[in-house]
Image (cartoon, rainbow, N blue to C red; front, side, top):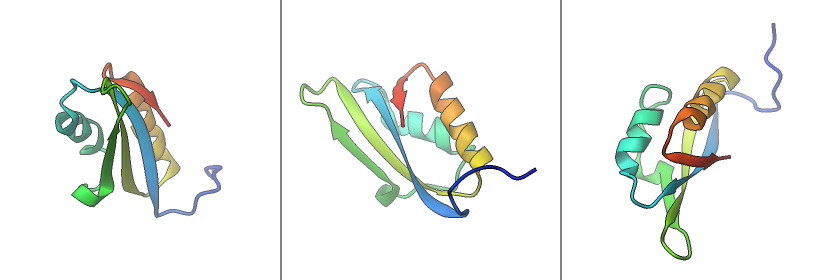
Amino acid sequence: MTEETLLVFPCRFPIKMMVRAEVDLQALIDELFAPLADALSADDVSMRPSKNGNYIAVTITINATSKAQLDRIYQAMTDHEHVLMSL
């Protein structure tokens, strides 16, 4: 069975999420991505606080190896209580 996707793996893939500003962001990233992706460098993670500083938009760029890997990452983010939104 072939996975249906327009992506060609492996590829660099940006994953975006929104969290509350008070969350320990490094611990959250480690918890979500360490089991599912290669080690991340500082260049792989960018953050931008919201206008009022209540939220942080985070972009993590990984070396994606398959659609199944991306599905597992998005499911882990969806299931996590501190991730408000993911794209």
